Length: 191
Image (cartoon, rainbow, N blue to C red; front, side, top):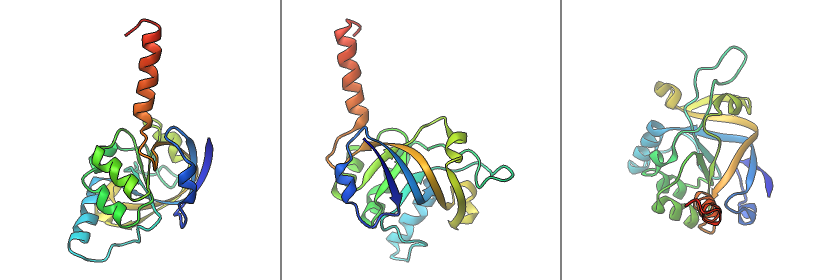
Protein backbone atom coordinates (compact mmCIF):
# COMPACT_ATOMS: atom_id res chain seq x y z
CA UNK A 1 0.00 0.00 0.00
CA UNK A 2 1.35 3.44 -0.89
CA UNK A 3 -0.06 6.40 1.00
CA UNK A 4 0.87 10.06 1.19
CA UNK A 5 0.80 11.54 4.69
CA UNK A 6 0.74 15.25 5.44
CA UNK A 7 2.35 16.52 8.65
CA UNK A 8 1.67 17.80 11.14
CA UNK A 9 -1.41 15.59 11.44
CA UNK A 10 -4.56 16.58 13.26
CA UNK A 11 -6.23 13.19 12.81
CA UNK A 12 -4.45 9.83 13.09
CA UNK A 13 -7.26 7.69 11.68
CA UNK A 14 -5.25 6.87 8.54
CA UNK A 15 -2.51 5.38 10.74
CA UNK A 16 -4.89 2.48 11.50
CA UNK A 17 -4.80 1.46 7.82
CA UNK A 18 -1.00 1.35 7.63
CA UNK A 19 0.96 -1.83 8.24
CA UNK A 20 4.62 -2.54 8.77
CA UNK A 21 6.23 -2.66 5.33
CA UNK A 22 3.94 -0.11 3.67
CA UNK A 23 5.72 2.47 1.54
CA UNK A 24 4.58 6.04 2.07
CA UNK A 25 5.47 9.52 0.97
CA UNK A 26 5.48 12.50 3.29
CA UNK A 27 4.59 16.11 2.61
CA UNK A 28 4.08 19.19 4.71
CA UNK A 29 6.16 20.44 7.62
CA UNK A 30 8.20 18.07 9.73
CA UNK A 31 10.65 18.58 12.58
CA UNK A 32 14.29 17.56 12.24
CA UNK A 33 16.36 16.86 15.34
CA UNK A 34 19.24 14.78 16.61
CA UNK A 35 20.64 13.77 19.99
CA UNK A 36 21.47 17.19 21.45
CA UNK A 37 18.09 18.72 20.60
CA UNK A 38 16.37 15.69 22.12
CA UNK A 39 18.46 16.11 25.28
CA UNK A 40 17.48 19.80 25.55
CA UNK A 41 13.78 19.09 24.91
CA UNK A 42 13.77 16.44 27.65
CA UNK A 43 15.52 18.86 30.00
CA UNK A 44 12.80 21.47 29.35
CA UNK A 45 10.11 18.85 30.04
CA UNK A 46 11.81 17.83 33.29
CA UNK A 47 11.98 21.51 34.34
CA UNK A 48 8.31 21.95 33.35
CA UNK A 49 9.44 24.78 31.07
CA UNK A 50 7.66 25.56 27.79
CA UNK A 51 8.91 23.82 24.67
CA UNK A 52 10.04 25.98 21.74
CA UNK A 53 7.39 24.38 19.50
CA UNK A 54 4.25 22.29 19.92
CA UNK A 55 4.95 18.61 19.33
CA UNK A 56 1.29 17.74 18.77
CA UNK A 57 0.84 15.82 15.51
CA UNK A 58 4.47 16.26 14.50
CA UNK A 59 6.83 13.91 12.71
CA UNK A 60 10.35 14.07 14.14
CA UNK A 61 13.03 13.12 11.59
CA UNK A 62 16.36 12.09 13.09
CA UNK A 63 18.78 14.04 10.92
CA UNK A 64 21.52 16.62 11.09
CA UNK A 65 21.69 18.16 7.62
CA UNK A 66 24.99 19.11 6.06
CA UNK A 67 25.53 22.75 5.00
CA UNK A 68 23.35 23.94 2.15
CA UNK A 69 24.99 24.32 -1.26
CA UNK A 70 24.09 27.47 -3.22
CA UNK A 71 20.41 27.56 -4.13
CA UNK A 72 19.36 24.70 -1.84
CA UNK A 73 17.75 24.81 1.64
CA UNK A 74 19.99 22.02 3.02
CA UNK A 75 22.81 19.77 1.96
CA UNK A 76 22.69 16.00 2.40
CA UNK A 77 19.93 15.00 4.81
CA UNK A 78 20.19 11.26 5.41
CA UNK A 79 18.74 9.61 8.52
CA UNK A 80 20.57 9.09 11.79
CA UNK A 81 20.42 5.76 13.63
CA UNK A 82 17.19 5.90 15.60
CA UNK A 83 18.10 3.91 18.71
CA UNK A 84 20.29 6.84 19.78
CA UNK A 85 17.05 8.72 20.52
CA UNK A 86 15.38 5.84 22.39
CA UNK A 87 15.99 7.34 25.85
CA UNK A 88 14.05 10.48 24.85
CA UNK A 89 11.33 9.08 22.61
CA UNK A 90 8.63 7.99 25.10
CA UNK A 91 8.56 11.44 26.74
CA UNK A 92 8.24 13.17 23.35
CA UNK A 93 5.53 10.77 22.20
CA UNK A 94 3.64 11.66 25.38
CA UNK A 95 3.77 15.31 24.20
CA UNK A 96 1.85 14.39 21.05
CA UNK A 97 4.53 13.40 18.52
CA UNK A 98 2.66 11.38 15.88
CA UNK A 99 5.63 9.72 14.16
CA UNK A 100 9.38 9.37 14.34
CA UNK A 101 11.67 8.61 11.42
CA UNK A 102 15.27 7.53 11.10
CA UNK A 103 16.99 4.25 10.32
CA UNK A 104 17.42 1.00 12.20
CA UNK A 105 15.55 -0.85 14.93
CA UNK A 106 14.01 0.56 18.10
CA UNK A 107 14.09 -0.91 21.59
CA UNK A 108 11.10 -2.96 22.82
CA UNK A 109 10.24 -0.10 25.23
CA UNK A 110 10.14 2.47 22.43
CA UNK A 111 8.12 0.15 20.19
CA UNK A 112 5.61 -0.23 23.02
CA UNK A 113 5.53 3.57 23.54
CA UNK A 114 4.79 4.09 19.83
CA UNK A 115 1.93 1.61 20.08
CA UNK A 116 0.61 3.10 23.35
CA UNK A 117 0.58 6.65 21.95
CA UNK A 118 -0.79 5.62 18.52
CA UNK A 119 2.37 6.78 16.78
CA UNK A 120 4.28 5.33 13.86
CA UNK A 121 7.97 4.61 13.50
CA UNK A 122 9.13 5.18 9.94
CA UNK A 123 12.46 4.62 8.24
CA UNK A 124 13.92 6.33 5.24
CA UNK A 125 16.88 5.36 3.14
CA UNK A 126 20.35 5.53 4.64
CA UNK A 127 23.09 6.44 2.19
CA UNK A 128 20.68 8.55 0.14
CA UNK A 129 21.18 11.91 1.87
CA UNK A 130 21.72 13.87 -1.37
CA UNK A 131 18.56 12.39 -2.91
CA UNK A 132 16.50 13.00 0.24
CA UNK A 133 17.65 16.63 0.38
CA UNK A 134 15.90 17.20 -2.95
CA UNK A 135 12.60 16.38 -1.23
CA UNK A 136 13.21 19.23 1.24
CA UNK A 137 11.85 22.47 -0.22
CA UNK A 138 12.48 24.78 2.73
CA UNK A 139 14.39 24.60 6.01
CA UNK A 140 14.51 26.89 9.00
CA UNK A 141 15.95 26.67 12.49
CA UNK A 142 13.23 26.75 15.16
CA UNK A 143 15.40 26.45 18.30
CA UNK A 144 18.88 25.81 19.63
CA UNK A 145 20.80 27.47 16.75
CA UNK A 146 24.03 27.12 18.75
CA UNK A 147 23.89 23.37 17.99
CA UNK A 148 24.51 23.91 14.26
CA UNK A 149 23.33 20.84 12.34
CA UNK A 150 21.90 19.40 15.58
CA UNK A 151 19.55 22.37 16.05
CA UNK A 152 15.79 21.90 15.93
CA UNK A 153 14.78 22.45 12.30
CA UNK A 154 11.50 22.61 10.47
CA UNK A 155 11.61 21.14 6.97
CA UNK A 156 8.93 21.62 4.36
CA UNK A 157 8.95 18.38 2.38
CA UNK A 158 7.35 16.98 -0.75
CA UNK A 159 7.25 13.32 -1.84
CA UNK A 160 9.67 12.33 0.94
CA UNK A 161 9.94 8.51 0.82
CA UNK A 162 9.59 6.29 3.89
CA UNK A 163 8.61 2.80 5.00
CA UNK A 164 6.41 1.98 8.00
CA UNK A 165 8.65 -0.04 10.32
CA UNK A 166 6.48 -0.20 13.46
CA UNK A 167 2.75 0.12 12.95
CA UNK A 168 0.04 0.71 15.55
CA UNK A 169 -0.40 -3.03 16.07
CA UNK A 170 3.13 -3.80 17.24
CA UNK A 171 4.40 -5.31 13.98
CA UNK A 172 8.05 -4.72 13.04
CA UNK A 173 9.00 -4.71 9.36
CA UNK A 174 12.64 -5.58 10.09
CA UNK A 175 11.57 -8.72 11.96
CA UNK A 176 9.06 -9.67 9.26
CA UNK A 177 11.68 -9.26 6.52
CA UNK A 178 14.19 -11.30 8.50
CA UNK A 179 11.68 -14.15 8.95
CA UNK A 180 10.82 -14.07 5.23
CA UNK A 181 14.48 -14.25 4.18
CA UNK A 182 15.14 -17.02 6.71
CA UNK A 183 12.31 -19.07 5.15
CA UNK A 184 13.69 -18.44 1.65
CA UNK A 185 17.17 -19.47 2.71
CA UNK A 186 15.84 -22.61 4.40
CA UNK A 187 13.78 -23.55 1.36
CA UNK A 188 16.93 -23.21 -0.80
CA UNK A 189 18.97 -25.21 1.72
CA UNK A 190 21.23 -22.23 2.40
CA UNK A 191 20.83 -21.85 6.13
